[in-house]
Length: 443
Image (cartoon, rainbow, N blue to C red; front, side):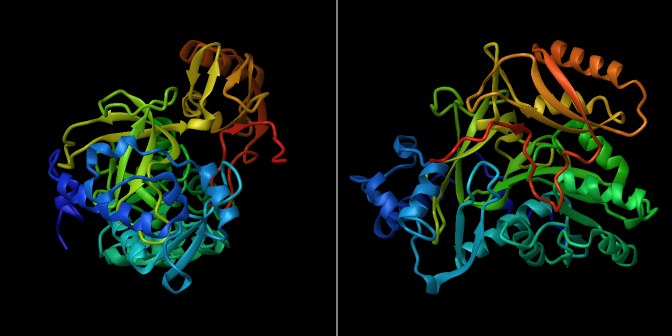
């Protein structure tokens, strides 16, 4: 199959051309939740779906993760936004629980068809084709990613190598025989696999033949120094991608231009950007930073409307990309609840990671920022743990250089604490947090 786009009518749509489709599906979704969802029957009381217009969307109240958690306690197990009975549920996943107790996500047969199509759109943009062998070193447990990527890549037509994240040494040995053209994983786990191949198996990761690697689930692939090192190590192009368990494991991904992540949820999801301070909807234009908010418009089992994802993104493009795709392109700058305010200045953990990564290969690029309170305000010097490579020489001098770079580029004082290589990296392909806050009792 020789084509540029998986869904050309969606991916190259001109502004306004999808208005009729999106408005129609939004009305259908509103009718669906008002008929079946106790949560939205209460939140959207008085709304008339037949008269609702796309321009009215911002008038609806937002839905938060905390609301979903509470709803799943009141209406177990899937919550008051669940709209189908057990006979129509094909699969249940749990969120990663990165920001709190995991929440459950249900999917009907139609929902899973949507997932497969969304995954195929994104994987196609990152260069995967039916003739490729697609390696999936991700967990196939409760987390949505592994199984969803597996099904989406099968839908695309690729031969899938579903190794999961168990027995990585054995997997690398098998892959020496099979080879692989494409891989989808997380930045930390693909880095761990490369280290394992080199240090314990005496294997050059390039020997596996990977051409394209999609990385998501955590910051990393969008950081220039991290991307560069992974590309050099594996001899492959690296693409950033992003999604969420509540909607689909991947909704955004880069194309061959590697110049920001395109939105691939057309016809299924409507995205909005909120001002991270005021919560107001902001105009999509190059350079703005906002919190992502999604509205499902084609979901049966657990639809969420105007749901705050918690991801802070920067719009890096708002016109037609060189690849021909249209709409905004973004890069993720962190979590809204990870944003730090240091002496009145907003600081994103990904910016700190970018500074530390510029000191590779003496550092691994892995960091952990510690705060002294649950809120965003942090007093300098800010405690930051940094992994160092073995035998890097004068650690005290390197500490001074990093602290100076942080002060010059991010305008705050840092206190760098060294930890050994591997101490902060996530294992098993799961997410890792960049910010560590004091534990707060839920009682």
